[in-house]
Length: 196
Image 1 (tube, rainbow, N blue to C red):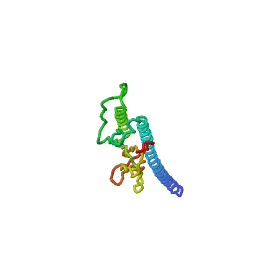
Image 2 (cartoon, rainbow, N blue to C red):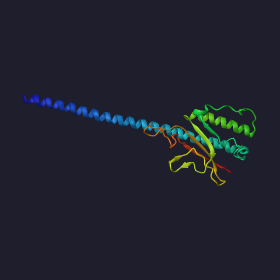
Image 3 (cartoon, rainbow, N blue to C red):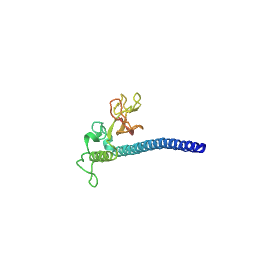
Image 4 (cartoon, rainbow, N blue to C red):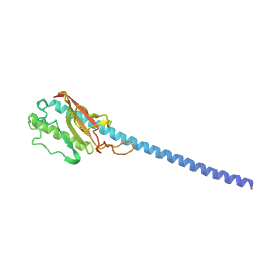
């Protein structure tokens, strides 16, 4: 009879060990799944960031290549003041001339370049917002983020800045918002040497 008591006690103890092991394994799997989700979200945001920098550099190159328009005043320059938000403006309207195989002057080429660029950012970045302006302080120290506000500054050497943003998420899945409850720019690309 003493042997039966020992056997029952041993088999019950093994069941508790198995339950504890399963519990620890479940915690580990949940933790690994959470890390995988965070890694996927971070990887996605990193890919969007890389694409945004490439698209901003592409527009900067097109601006530099169109010297005729870039030497004009800011009010006559089709690149300066460019403002686009996919959720409000929809897909961009095509310009009067598509310069694929047709000869275009510098203004028509600038309009075409802006149209093509808007089309690319709209199809590449989710709910994209873009702004091109003169800004002496694209970084907001108080908010510790880039800002959509354009502050040309009193000096005449304020550079053009291409700002791109989209609704990003924090690592915990919450939406990135600024004090005005809007998503801030993710990229601010300075176009040199075009200063006023």
